[in-house]
Amino acid sequence: MKKDPSDTFSLRQCFTVKRQKTVSFLCESSCIKSSKMFLTTVNLAKAKSKTILVQMMSAAGTGYVFNTKRNRLRDKLVLRKHDPLVNKHVLFFEKKKIRSI
Image (tube, rainbow, N blue to C red; front, side, top):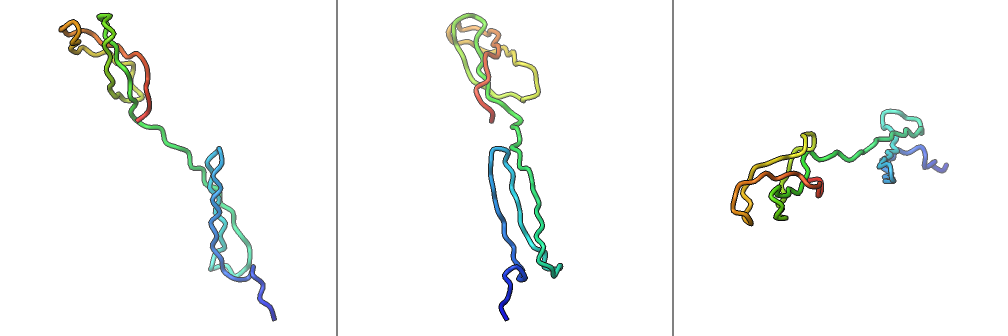
């Protein structure tokens, strides 16, 4: 008498990573003696970072810039720092977002 392959216990993980980042698990429970398969889908969304890297530009008009990081949820940064081209403390405004950290 031949054994049916579907009667034996098997645990298969079938990872299908697509654009929506879903992972499917196909498994057969060992406590259930039938040959039914259960399908579970888990969405794996990427978490957004908490901080971003931004470019700060001098308000003195010298073109001096530096990069700093700030919290994603806060308003745009305005800092008072030293500008070496005019050798004074001036305001620096956030010019653009560079990347997430």
